[in-house]
Length: 333
Image (cartoon, rainbow, N blue to C red):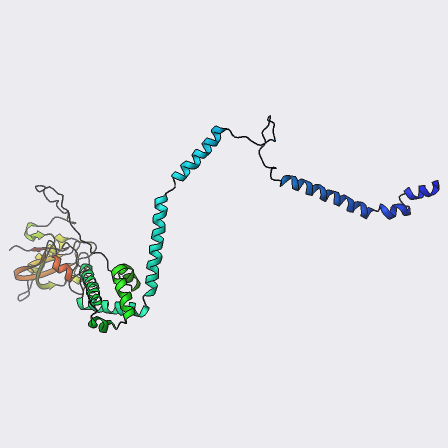
């Protein structure tokens, strides 16, 4: 019997191979580890596992707040509630309702009706011609007033002009009364605001004008130079192909031409020079550049422009500057 027991407990015996194999030992160890992991996970996820403990205190280990702390918490909650922008929130809610209602009305207006409105307004603006934005605004507002009046009085003329059904008339009336700006946006009508330019002259009355500096050598007194001046006359020398370095040179060219003119030729008595590096404006089709020198002749010299172009002239010539860029002179005898 002892011999049998010895075989049973030996590592190579059948008994060991039956109930204590390496595979069963491994399975047993894995099961043990799994049970331990489940116990740890359960302890971590228990409701009271994260409750702060109170060291050095008895009775369960949960923090016990004092009445003063509870009072402070309640007070902070009350302050946060009172600080809420209740009126602002209510106003935003109302605006959302208004916007949703206006958006619904916008969708209700048929596209065909919007096109009819835009065509009708466009005809009015075309009849107006080329006018300022203020006049256009008045025409559009007048159209809106007329249509509202016609709709309210159930005018058959309005219905025939726009070819509207009763439902379209009702929608148009509501749009003209309550959603006019939205309707203009939908039909692509935008008229810029009229910009009124006012020049403020804060210069003292008795202060002398600043003298402009003329590039080049000083001009002879007989040149009679006048800034921002353009004299008319018959062209003795075409300025587009006649350039001079300075106004003094231009005046001297006029003096030399008059001195050396042959019998029967026009003698220069007017010079017109462009001193601006950006060129000089003229209502003709040519581009007048810096240093152009025109030599002219006129028995009775006549001004084309002096100092500034008039407002009416600039309205007719949008590219004209405010100040006359040319400088001229009538040669003294």
